[in-house]
Length: 201
Image (cartoon, rainbow, N blue to C red; front, side, top):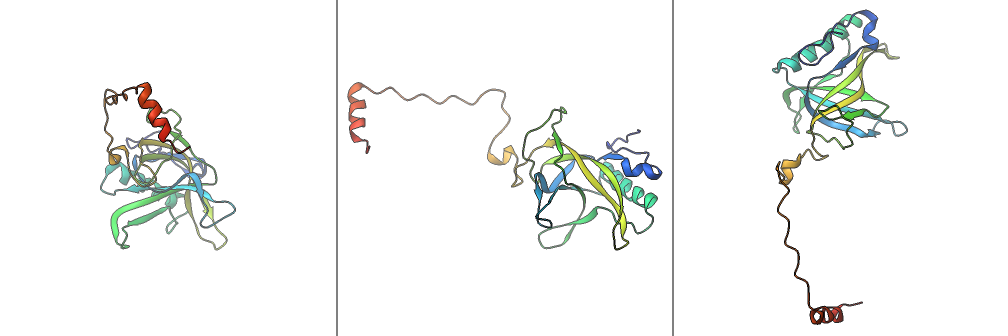
């Protein structure tokens, strides 16, 4: 399959879209449920999911958004529902960014930049890219569109569940280990006996 410079798999035609995998460019993660399912809407069987922020002014982001729209139009037609929404701030004002949602009933595989398996909790604010499978659907109400089945996530920058990276906690990259603390001076036998006599047990 041909890949664009954004890492998006292209060349989707006809019913192939139903089994086609696509890979997003790197973007900031929001509303992250990768280590446990979101059960807010289904307590019995929640979904693993993540949204990524896409900037329409960013070339690779704009290309990915267009690919989703193009697949939906080709497979379903005009007016098809797509997993793209406006990003909003706490006051419900649009930020100008777009959110793309990926979801699945199964936990995704996590990888680092070296493509090695990653054992970590990915929080909002992490920079990731997502591998997903395009699914064409039509619900009982006659509404049709596409959604993106979450398969795997590659992490570029890791943030915790509060949206903080290591730097936010005061850490910095160092080539050497931090200075080793000076060990305490051993006590004399008299000092040790006096200390033990003062213990409350």
